[in-house]
Length: 401
Image (cartoon, rainbow, N blue to C red; front, top):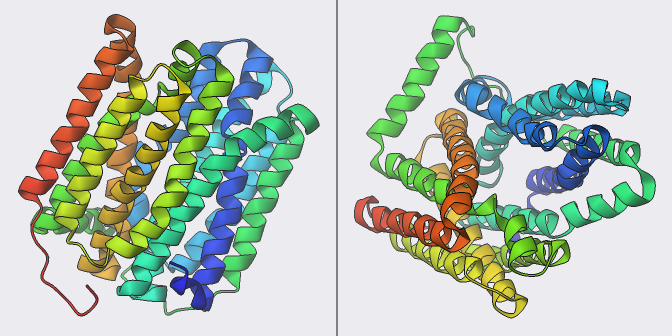
């Protein structure tokens, strides 16, 4: 699983992203908690989520086009510096009347992340190639996700209570600067030769990306299947904390469930490295989706931690595979010069499905109960597995598989 770390540029990219992601996850609990403390309003607190997701919906596809046209190394470097600056604006928030600054900063930070993510996803195969080192790189990325999920939010809550909100902001600023330095030290590569980025040309590039997805059966069905699954995932993810509080005993139990998901992501990383190169995407992806649906059903019908924690670990393991299989497959089967815009379409679909699920899930649970939502959402997740096994094509075998 560690093979990709032998490549110096990937080692720098991975370590920088790990630090910046950890800094960001420290704020996942701290920012809403601080807004709630200042305003006493659940609505004001909920707007922090909207501020993060709306830029992704509005700007995602355009960001992918730009990441294909611009030097991706410079894009990542510039967005890290930009995010460090906009996050610093939150230091000025100290009263209900200034909370709007947090919303603006979160939206601007999200806009920077929108440019960074497709650039990084397209940059990775340019650094490590599309063979076995790519699955190693994606396994390490999953390891990073699991680690920050495991320690980021709880550590952020502890630091908030111990040192206060400004210290967390300074830590996040520093994390972006560390990432920028790491990216700056990577090797410069030739920038893509493109025509001037006029409005008409950007629109033409966007249409080309859409046509690429429509014409590539594997990518099209991966997009549809992953979006359907994310709808179910979003509806259940929005209720993890209520599950812990109402069914498992309280906030502490909810935190343990979230940490168990992180443990699952950590355990899933070596499986990604072991299986993605050996098993075709169709059976591997369908099996991962079905296993995640079963794990969610077990988790959301649990009434004690003895059942809930192993179920959460299982969801994390299979869930890491549901992320890694589509990403690795798209990186391997599409030309590198369109990866940015295609990745951005995936991210936009993920954001839209997450937002819909986050609204619909609590509404269904409120009206019909948590168990009813669990059965409905897991049915949708299982349907995505049926779509995958029915519609995804078999890839030709290569020397790398």
